Image: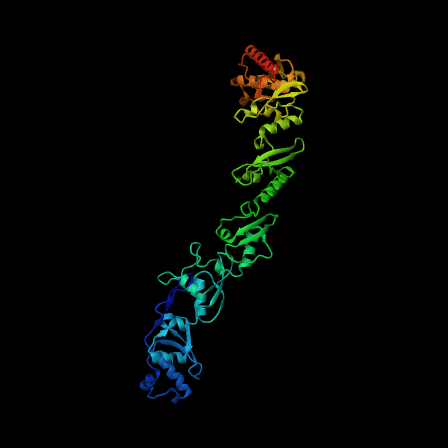
Length: 496
């Protein structure tokens, strides 16, 4: 063993050369050396003080320094010393060991005589895992306990594993790093307790009380703080392939799904959602397929919706909308029926860009109507008649033409100083019918729109038109559209 170089406590690299195992020159037989140098045949012929001096002289001649011998008793007398090759670190062996080396003419084995603990402490510090405790005899089976930044836990390795794993080809001690931790889960102390703490801190869960660690692949049954069951695989947890309680970790994913749907419904609407188990295909379902469920609405009762897995956890998606309905035809029919509107049985919802603005036919009190989904959603009523008006409005800064609808007299709708002229008013019709007329007229006169030139507080700015629009042609347009829509309403439901 060559001397460790550098001082790890001051940030310099520590280098250890573990070969050759035998260093220094070969020992000569002690009795031969004693006769040649001291002219006596046996050590027992000398006094106790001389014996110690003779032994020290013999060892110094063979490369040992700082030799310490408290007293000489026999061949079992312990001798402490240092070697040039190992620097500051102390060695220890018995006098009998040196005597036998002399007889066999061997060199000293630095690995065998080194007092390991000080070296281990320095090496562990250089590896950036300071030793907390060192146990065992002075050999390769020593066990070293240290804090692991990889696991945030106490770990333990034997000296041989640490020694062979922490050095490069040149004998430099390699600090641990995320790319070379130099220890794995096998080194973790108290594996069952570690897993319990890991599940608690990382996933917010409690491992079953009777569970004990067996292997990295053995299942870990546990329960989340909010009551979900899960079964984890330790390998997946440690490698980041499992990030927490989910449908993937659930022992029964259908039960898990039912619970998630119920809770999300309660959080979003105040009432639990219920999985539609008759429609739901549990065998072929995956997170990219829609989940059918029932939701309760105080006004419309039980309705069936769809949601994708990711949508369940989106607070912006309550799904009480047409887009979230499992069967949009059934959804609309149910909503209309709650208002007393009877939609024909052969009518079906068509999913296209204009579906929200396509009129839906229905019968109400023996009379036929039609209404777009957007109008229905905005609260348009068939039992409330309105009429369309075409007027000139004037205020201090603006004079505009205005198209609109109302059920009240225009004198109540606008103050006298603002209503300059009344150009035309239609007959009263149901609100959805008159809104159809208004929507078409506004669309066909959109090039005269002046909403962007009026202040935000201007009442009715989106229906305002510039004074450049011909009044007579606009009146003719209103009359024509009114008659066309009237004919369509009279032909209901045959036109569908």
